[in-house]
Image (cartoon, rainbow, N blue to C red; front, side):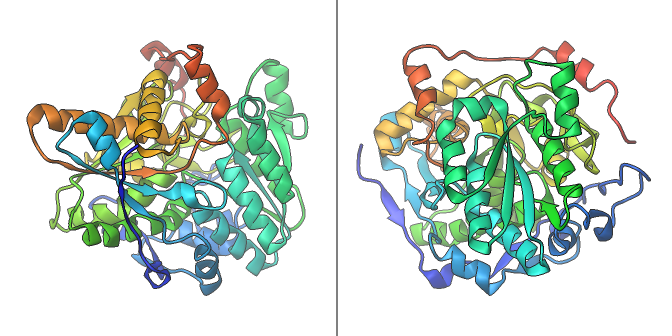
Length: 453
């Protein structure tokens, strides 16, 4: 490990407003549709599911900046601003002329970027007088973040955790329980959606789509309860823009500006957070940065999915979202990057990809762990399996710069650490991990009968 340089902001530099990218987009996303009427959603259509202020944020297509409440900013101060780091150790290990930077979101109390949205979502629920909330979690980062936020605001929380991760990652489950959340392996027998899936597929190990169905069902059938979501939707991406807004200031401190911005991709929360503030300068013509979303080869919705309206969950409880999708019934492989095992991309990212304004790559599991190991040995931080997709994509670009003899500036988001994911590293070191690919026939079959327009 060699000495890398950090760029540190002060508390006063924490953003005072979130950046809403939709008003600046050259082509706006198609509206989400009510699954019953097939008409564009209105905020009040979402009120039975989400807090009212979050519903308004979700459908806000006019305001580029949305003020961050003071109480939320005060909680952000516990760990924000997060460091920007020049990864000199990784540069040396790759022998590349590229300058590599990473935004270190692993320093939050729960070890990931997810707290950036968990806090405001819990805040707006509490402000409305809501007493109970439900959510889903894949690998457990979002569940851990929401558990802490719910505890702070005095909310009762039930978390449906994808069953394969429930078993693979027992310590993430323990973190949630330590904060006071109830954690249920999904699919479960506690909801109609879960019981149906277990009846139809007794050995099914779950998906984020399944867990969302269960959480939404519980929220809509429990008095004074609402659902909160950790990715995909516009208001979640909005909250995460604190990452990129800080990174802009820090890149200026470093005297650099990114040629390439990279984030791992499951539903879009951390990719949106690091990229959207920079992307607005591409829209204005000031810059020509390239944006890369790095997703698993086993769940390639951006690189191989179909652009169509689809449900955000398996049971079909959610609004219809215009998205790049593998089909809401898609059963992903049991890879260790549990947070990236989602069938679709959010409406904004899907539109940006459709319009050629961002790029995407899908990366095999073994390449991500190789990249993670190199990063750990050169920078001293063991990354989460999800974040390792962004590292692998950054390494690809750094090696390309070496081949071309160009000094590219690469920025990626280290969305979380992997200190609670060591069973995955044990499997990698033992040679027990494999790559997973899906055939075009599987994708075609799963997207043959998509709902909506």
